[in-house]
Image (cartoon, rainbow, N blue to C red; front, side, top):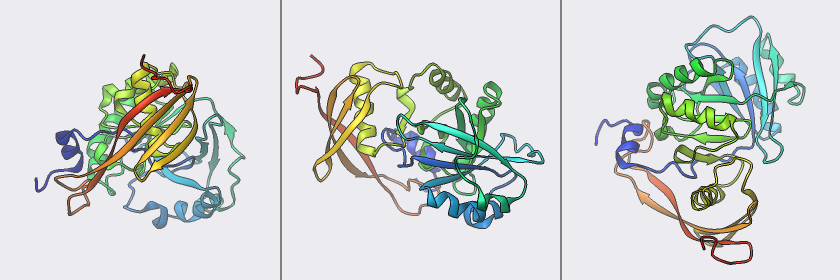
Amino acid sequence: MTGERCADGCVRRDDTPTATAPPVRRWVLVELPGAWGPDPLRRTAEGVAITAVAGSAGARVLFIRRPGRTAAGKRRRWAFADSTPGQERILWSEFDDPAELADVRLDEGVPSDRPVYLVCTHGKHDLCCAVRGRPVAAALAAARPEDTWECSHVGGDRFAANLLVLPHGLYYGRLDGKTAVAVAEAHERGLVLGPVSRGRSSIPAPAQAAEHFARGRLGEDRLDRLSLVSVDQVERHRWQVRFTGPDVVVDVKAGFHRADGPLTCAGSTPGTAREFELVSMSDGAGSDANR
């Protein structure tokens, strides 16, 4: 399949997006209008200035801009988001000079109860993110203009268009404009749109998979249900995951398969993908939860 883009290969193979959200609990968003190079964190004044501050908090930096590359105002925005379950929050601030970012306090911003929708359009990192992401960002911005931003690389290029919903750290993939708007509508009703969910970045991949399977078996799409209690590794590639609300124990195992092509557009050799499968699910007392 020489020349095939990674997202096209993902669709052709029908790769599952389940449990592919990278593990991140804290985020720093920095408005950076205009074109982004492959590595804006190291190659821009804004990136250099914010690196130490974000690193000290264990936060991942994402650059943001309004869809359509609209010019920023005189003062630009930055934000700190915490996706820790039960502690989700986002605080917004402004800056004039990139040098100011080196001295900011992450808790100094103004709290917001509005969700933030970030669509990856970082084409210099992976072309699929631009080709598939920009139309999705435009569609979502038409429906949610104040809450929608384009963002730099979020991971999982083959699942483009990718959407990250903050502050909850919810990843969605393989979206088009219609499904992106549906995700936003569902989120604002307190619901998860399971078929396109990549998982919750604040919990480890085995727990993301277990949550996905539990929601499917229980018919549960409410965001505030299924709180993670524990993740216990019982074999090399097998985990027992416990949730409360409702109380369930989900046994999952991971398998690995060699794809027939690269998993990113920058790749030159076939990649290896991990997928999870459900082994069993029971209630907290050990009874089959499906009875």
